[in-house]
Structure formats: structure tokens, C-alpha cells
Length: 248
Ligand code: ADP
Ligand code: ADP
Image (cartoon, rainbow, N blue to C red; front, side, top):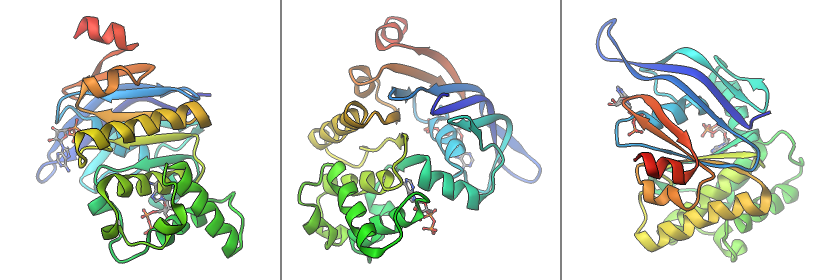
């Protein structure tokens, strides 16, 4: 089974009373075990809509009009918010764009990772095991001083460390696949590179599949097994980096 297979996806946004605008159409996409796939395209081409659709995180003004979303053979198309929250906690990890809006400013990092650990149905039940699993996620996200970060609040961390905390939350459910939507857009260039290379390492060391959304083809080129190019709501290219570069 593919870790994620999206077939013929079409999504509309409401733009007025009974008026809908199609944002993406005919989207076919798959991520195989251990594969690093990038979804690239200009701003407005539909990348975020596809990823939010796959995660069950579309705004209420959006509707999936056709297509299917299947994780490791399980068809989750049409599942409600509650069931999709479990899918996110157990099958797919999501790394959002901006730690400043995605982390809770008044909760310690450790608490936020533990909440994600608890959502994992396969996780152990007692508190000390939750804490140990949270520390392990922080370390896997590249936070070597995990015990210290565990006790800190988001504002005490640098941008790169906050982004790593988001990676730890995404890893807490031990997913086989991670979806990352412009995960470094809030960071400066050198930190961006380190974070993206960390995603590559998760693929290499843990075999986690990655779907990376980026507007920057350069970011995708030397890290991806395969690159998908979106234009005006459709995937217009799907192939290895060198092929996509030749056709660019
Ligand atoms: P990208 O992630 O590639 O920048 P998006 O998925 O955000 O593209 O947007 C795709 C299209 O859907 C754009 O035309 C955008 O204006 C439209 N769109 C995105 N979000 C909304 C929304 N909440 N309401 C209405 N239209 C939206
Ligand atoms: P809640 O209000 O219940 O926390 P959320 O939508 O914020 O609802 O998250 C639902 C659950 O999904 C969380 O409790 C957590 O276990 C899991 N979760 C949160 N963020 C992520 C993520 N980035 N990747 C995977 N699972 C996540």
C-alpha cells in the first residue's frame, strides 16, 4: 500500500451564497513507504488546499467534491472531524508553517508533546511512559537537550527550536508519513536548511515518508525522490527532480 494515495481530488471554496470556486481538480498523488515527495507550485496553485484536504483540516468554507483519500489502504474520505483527529494522531504527522501560531504560548513544550502522545492509540497508558515518549519525540526531532526544552515555554526557544518542537508533536503519534506545509517559511535561510535536512534524516533513519509543500523548487530539488508541480489547481508534472527540472 502507498502511505497516502489521493485520487481525482476536487475541492471548492464557497465565495458567496450558493457560489463555489474550484480550487483544485483531478489531483492524483501518492507517497510510497520511505519516499520523500515534494509538492511545489506558485502561491495560490492549490498546495495547501490539497494537504488540508488530506488531513481533514479544511476550513468550513471548503467542500471536497470528488475523489478519495487513502492512508495505507484505509479510505478516510468523508470521515468526520473526530475520526480525522485520530488519523492525525496515529497515521499521519502534520508540521504546520508557523510555530508562533501553532504552539500554545501558555503551555510548556513538554505538556504539548505529551498531549499529542496521549492521542496515540498505541501509546502506553501511564504518565511516566507518556513523559518518556514525549522526550523521545523531542530527541528524534533533533532537540538534544530534550529535558530542558520539555520544561520551557515557546517564547523561551529560538525559531528553529520551536519548529523542531512542532516536528516532535508531529512525531508523537509515531506516524509512517509526515505532511509538512512550508515548514520553514518563518525561519531564516540557514535554519531553514537545517530543518529541511532533518526531515531528510527522518526519512533515512526511520523510513518515514515525507510530503513537503514548498513554493521553492530549489528547496525540493536535491532532497526529493519525486517532485509534483501544481499549477492553477492541477498537478501538471510528476517525476524525479532531474525530469521536472528539464521541463521547468
Ligand atoms: P497554495 O497553497 O499553493 O498557495 P492554496 O491552496 O492556498 O494555494 O489556494 C488555492 C486557491 O484556493 C487559491 O485560488 C486561493 O485563493 C483559494 N483559497 C484558498 N483558501 C481559501 C479560502 N479559505 N477561501 C476561499 N478561497 C481560498
Ligand atoms: P484538540 O483540541 O483535541 O487538541 P487538535 O486538532 O489540536 O484538537 O489535535 C487533535 C489531536 O491530534 C491532538 O490531541 C494530537 O494528539 C494530534 N495532533 C496535534 N497536532 C498534530 C500533528 N502536528 N501531527 C500529528 N498529530 C497531531
